[in-house]
Image (cartoon, rainbow, N blue to C red; front, side, top):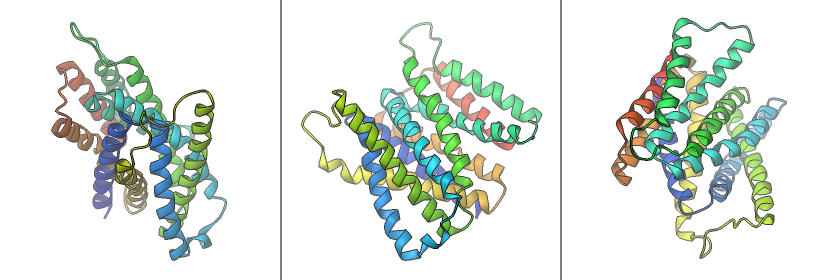
Length: 285
C-alpha cells in the first residue's frame, strides 16, 4: 500500500507541476494558484460535509492552517520557475525540499548518517551545475534557480506540517480542506494587493475560460498528491514513501520532453540528475 500511494503521489505531483507551469506561461502565477486551489477547496468542502469530517476538528488543524499560508508562496515561486524553464531542470531541483524534514529531525535530536551527508553534498552540487556554468549558450536564468529553491523549502515545510495535521482518513480530508481554504484566502489577499499596485491579475484579453478544466485538474491533482503522500507515510516506512514520492520530477520532465520537446544541455541534465540523486540519498538515509 505504501508503494502504491507513493507512486500515485509522484504521478499526480508531476502532472500538476507540468500543468501549473504551462498555465503560468499564459496566466499570472498568482491567479493560477488561487483559481486552481479554489476549485480544490470546493471539491474538498463537499467531501468534508458528506464524510462528517468536521468531527475530527482539533488543535492539530493549526498545522494545516500554517501549511495553507506557506503553500501558496511555494506554488507561486515554483510555477514562475517552471514558466521560465526549462522544466527538466527546474522540477528536479524542487525535490531538494526533502532537506526540510531532515532539518526537523536534527532539531529534534536526530543525527544524520553518512548517506544523508552525502545526499546534501550531491544535491548542492546538482544545484550549481543545473544553473551553469556553460562555456557557450545562455545558462538557466538565476531567477528560475532562486525561485525553485524557495519553492523547495516551502514544499518541504508544507509536507512536515500537513503530516502533523491528521492521523485518520476523515481527518486528512478536513486538514486538506482547511489548508486549501487558507491557501485561497492568502492567495486572494496577495492577488488583491498586487492588483492595487497595478499588476494585472489576468492576461490581455481577459480570463481564458477554456483553461478552467486545466486549472481544476492542477488544483485537484495537487491536493490528491498531498493526500496520497500522507497516506503512504502513515501506512509504511517514511523513507520508502519519500523515495518513491520524490520521483515526480521524472513525470514532469518526461511530459516537458514529450509535449514541449525540451532539450537539456549535458551540464544541465547532469545537475538535475545529481539533485535528484541527492534527494534520494537524503530520503533513504
